[in-house]
Image (tube, rainbow, N blue to C red):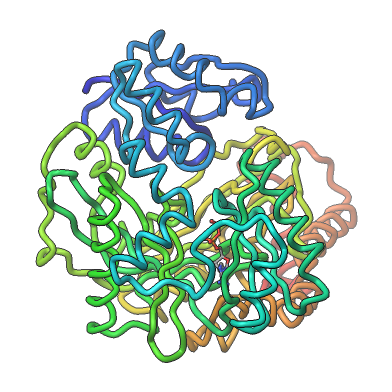
Length: 505
Ligand code: ADP
């Protein structure tokens, strides 16, 4: 392999690009009209336009991407996550066109990509699955019978599901019919497949997932867990590793279950096996994510293993060089997803132009973002604009560093989830690790109240006070000759000293 075409955009395109550089490989990227000036385009060795902004006409266009790979002279394709990453047709098309696909074989992808198929297979192999149907059902009666047997609440899920789409919680029989119709039509429009099945809704459980690497030559390792229980509407907001809920015994047991899943499905490359974990320490298999995941840096920070590099090495046919015994997680890592949504307005989308950008750094901090000042965050793509990862020797240190980094992080021009994360880092329940998949919904009222509380407008107040002091001093805007510091800054500092503006608590 010499040149890799990155069939993605944003932070994950940049992440893969960096792995290519570290390996001495040449990165090429594709881009839509909306991403012409993006950072991955600027940093890649080659960039190929693939179409207009809407993803269906660019990042989801298999023919356009294969043509780009040919034009760029690439010999491999990395799909990142989202878009075509878990589309077996794309994996197959890449292989058929003579490109190495950096991911699992199409067959394994198709197998684990169908949640019903995966459940059936795992059940057969003795892996505990969430109680529920092991078949798609097209009639209401099957769901009614299941729900009466298992008891409400239940959850309807799209067999081809992903990204929380096609999922409906049903708390009583009266809600079943409309939920069923809703789930089916949402599944049909999102995945072109209206297959739906049902599971028992597990409550007070944690989302715990196991990262695996498999070389397809019989070697596979698990790299420990990530806990992703802080979710809103079934979407992850904060991930961490390790999980406070796992001791060495359960960690080993879940790791072995994950490897059983890998073996059963003929899986190769990096993957994640997701479980729900109940209060008694019983894991239930949920699904396999056949790609590199958004939250992979959490595992990288505690194991020191570069997962994207490992993906490329495996795809190049190299045998796995990592041994299970040598994987020794160290410390604690937490990731906050910085999303272009306004947490003060019910997480309403907040597109716009990035007026100013200040990215945190310092001990234990890692930032994954392709954001640039002046760039526009559009509504065309996923609103994840940055990932902030903090590492510490223990959970408390990771939280403290995360707090510091969130305070440094400035993205102006749009609203983001930074203030929400800042509140979570101060929350006593979160600090104690008392979280489950319903925690965020329960905590949101108190977190929102804090968001709207004093301190919220500190920045605006600081600007207003600096302005007032400046006007009082009767200065002009132009800097005085020989004075490197702007009079604005001097007046702002004076206002601070006079106690008109309090530094943030
Ligand atoms: P998707 O593939 O669409 O992301 P998943 O199957 O991974 O959907 O589930 C996403 C989230 O939905 C889980 O992390 C969990 O919070 C919730 N969830 C899924 N299945 C159940 C269930 N049976 N009981 C309770 N919560 C569930």
